[in-house]
Length: 368
Image (cartoon, rainbow, N blue to C red):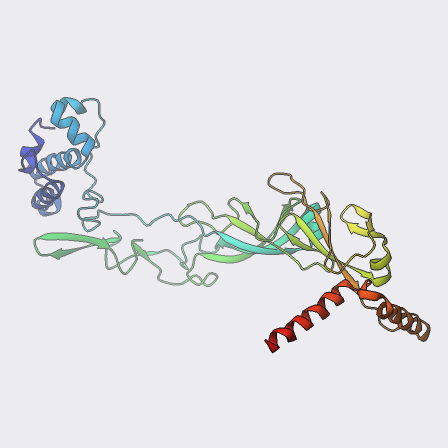
């Protein structure tokens, strides 16, 4: 490559702004582009000069080095001088001078599969077999989609690209008929209907680790849809959904449950067996326990799948009003209720006393 001054090549001054460098490059590149100068070796070499000058001067670091040391700054720098006319203009011209391009090899689509498991399975871990649909290369047409051989596209003559004249230069675009493949299907494959792929089912064994939660995903590499033209397959994501449990509600690694107790135990206290995932555990209900009281059982929840920290079990007390009373029970309760009324200052029912006081205050405020 010539050691000619890069500024001189682009016809600009040394204090030229970035916009001036780009404008000069655009003007000269159009003038000397090989598509406008077919077979002209001199124009092609000039185009290479222009390209290299722009690559140096449009980069702030390279331009600074060139201004200080000249061409010697890049003697060890492997600057790509190969003329790839499919991408020569970058952000200056975008894609309009694109060269011949092969049909892209696209990675296969990722797939998502939702699996419902019980809370017990989420806590302990489980292995599940799932049956999922996927796309497989059609055996009949070997993925071409054609019953028989493909034919060259009559629009681009098999090149996948077409050239169009726009003003004084040639624009090369992807063929709209074959979409860059260069070939067309004459007769559709009767198995895949021209798609080149058919839907099949496969059974996979999925190991679900303990502690997993709703919304967590398990990734299986390469178990998604097939890629195009030999590209890799996509991935399969197994999304976990935990079914509603009749006893527990899960929040992160904690478990919640309601603990109904009769008013006798609530008043006098007692012992109750609480279910956990490791069997029953006995807790002591203290006397005068009220509805809404929460008992926290440390480390009786679920072990985290991420940091192995074990959550808690929280039991909310619900004092249950008795139903279906027999005559004897009704008499006992009636007599008990009468004793509450006789006790001075509502000693046995402080909440009711507070309620009555608030009623009195309410009406007093209305009078004022």
